[in-house]
Every structure is written in structure tokens, then in C-alpha cells.
Image (tube, rainbow, N blue to C red; front, side, top):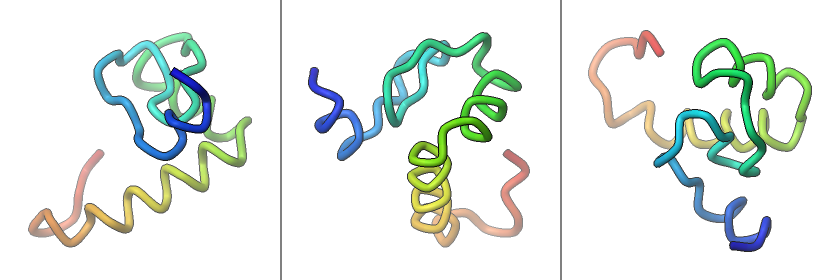
Length: 63
């Protein structure tokens, strides 16, 4: 899969990889947070995703 396709359509099937760029993460929790802090394009895509799904959940999302 090309990076362009991955960027357009996040892949959530492997928690050990960034769903936005496909890079391997040190772990699926804190590793993802560290990764988006170091990868501005992934951070931007994550924030866009969060805004889009935010209205789908009642109350504040804890994740």
C-alpha cells in the first residue's frame, strides 16, 4: 500500500503501527503519543480524525 493511500485512509488494524503513515511504533499506547509528537503530519491527521469522530461519542472521550 502506498503512503498516499495510507494517509487518505487510516489503517487501524495493527496497534504497533501508526494508522496514518504506517511507521512502526515502540508500542501502541505511549509510543503513538510520542510518534505524533515527532511527526507533525501524523499529529495533524490525528487531530482531524479526532474532530470528525468527536461528535459520534457522548460526553468527553477519554482516549
